[in-house]
Length: 170
Image (cartoon, rainbow, N blue to C red; front, side, top):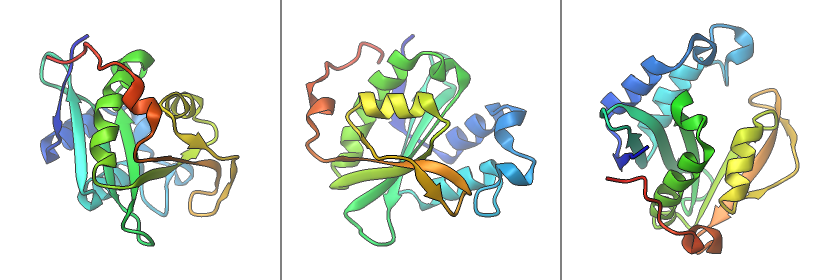
């Protein structure tokens, strides 16, 4: 499938949030992160990000969002996040190819990107590792109450630059 990647709007975030399934919306205390439901967490992530990119399908619907904002302890380090719909998540090659477009843009603003990934999210961990992220061993992450991996990549990562540009764009 072909996609169009461009800076995201609040409308993109709202449309992708509406497309999230009931199981993703999180109505139980177990699904809350820092006292927030995942949809609230998404809105706060969007508002605190310095860059948010959206991939749109041929019908113009957003199907993936990538965002990044500075960490509180180091303005050279960007805390990144990713949200996808099932359509893109089911096509890991497409998601990887789209990420190869977005991540260098983020790394032009931050010397390093990092995040925390739930250890049960095997698909995300495989994607990030395939893109050249370092995946540290899982440890208990107190804010979420889960075992998570810290993942990171630095500017100039050879994996991102060495891969061919995808043919997924219009």
